[in-house]
Image (cartoon, rainbow, N blue to C red; front, side, top):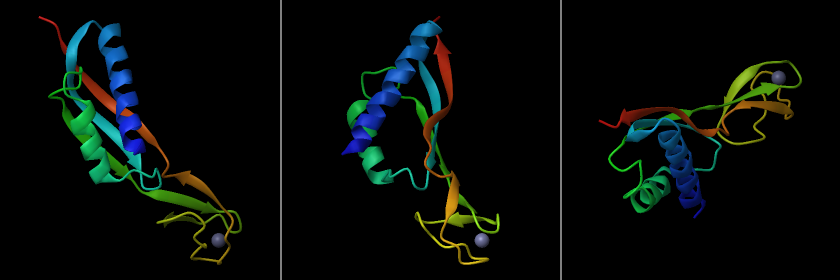
Length: 116
Ligand SMILES: [Zn+2]
């Protein structure tokens, strides 16, 4: 289950930020997940429950922004939303396209709680 290693790397990044800013813990975190990032929301939830307790992320409010996958047609330049890779352009039927977004998996924002 690769969601677990993803959550663990999120925990690592959070720990670094907390240490860098000498904060107590993370108050809230917003993740950005692309439609084609290969993340199962249920598996992510499960991994979160397993990996986060006893870390700086314990008790943090979690928000997830799902980013739709967008492609740009190499033939006509049309930009369109895709559900999977290699979907033909709805305007001209061309299969070659550049993926503009949809594979990201990152921490978008994080709010830290200061030490008293
Ligand atoms: Zn096209």
